[in-house]
Length: 490
Image 1: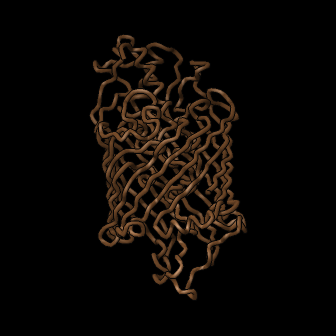
Image 2: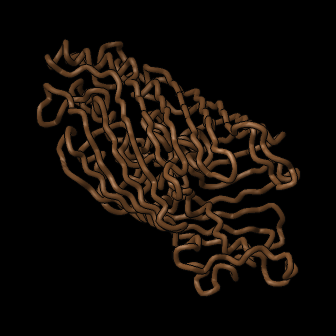
Image 3: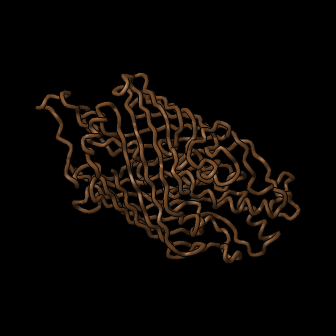
């Protein structure tokens, strides 16, 4: 960048563009690549005496776990050789009824295909798992087109394309207490995950807004991934420790739309610096691993602490190399550089109530908080919290209702730049503070393979208070968004 106004435009627009990147797909559903259909789990003929066999896999249309069932016997036949294939479609329609850059609705969808191979069954190699998955993303992007939010309205919004997602091999060691995963990985499948946040549609309840906005290309998370190595150790039933090192920029480039730079997910890049990440998990009152282990004596919960560090250079959000504000007409428009970036985070999932007997009814709460330096990050504090109720209506054992809030605080540097702009070049330019989204949702389980979800979101101060493109002296108005999602497992 060669001038102050150009540099200012770049930094202000950068605060909105990454909002669709690196989010967890199909919120509230297990990923297609990691599901294990019941048909595959059924014992092969001759393995279990007839008198001890488990019940047959349901074959009725409304009872089986997949729409296509055993696929003419193909699923159990492949299962005998350790191969599981999965196909899942998520489609949704979202509409902002008020606020935003403009009103209107948009359809978007995601098809996921995956193959998982148990190497012991397939090749005689104990403890190994091979995984490959692909995405077909279609439709349009309401958040990018109408909302201009940092916390995207949907976790599956992304550029239209067909792409490779994950490609990795995992090996279990030391009796299953340690495993190593090597290859192209999406970190939102294991790190920073909140169990009770997954039913919500807004992207921030999957891969949180802070890494999505602050990491290069949004980080190695949906729809992108990075080459790397992840180590997981379970010293006891209560403790789990994970650590990994990955390429720091899954796009492979610092310029342009990251998803277009790695359009088909085949840029196996190792030139984007390094991303180090670690997480410690502590679980309480978990159900026993086997039926003979007794019952948990209290309400289950999981608590996590983690961090990440990226070795790349990061642009200052306010000042240039000479110490002038980027809003100053005398600025050269080139942001000052900071070596490295980092964040610390904590996640808590806790069941707070369970109905006795065989009732599935329960209430769970979650909270997730993470922080990062305010000089080099657009968002320096992200907070999620919410509550979910399973089986909210009698007879609807697999339905889930939930209410949650997401908060993204604009970093000190970006706030200062907005103030400088108002005082130096553009009187009346809106100040920036924080973006808050409140979401209410209901998942209706039509059949084991089919789910419908109604959703309502309200966003306060989109992007923390950026100017309305149609009226730069005013900020983008608060937004009311309604949506309907359907998810089908084939």
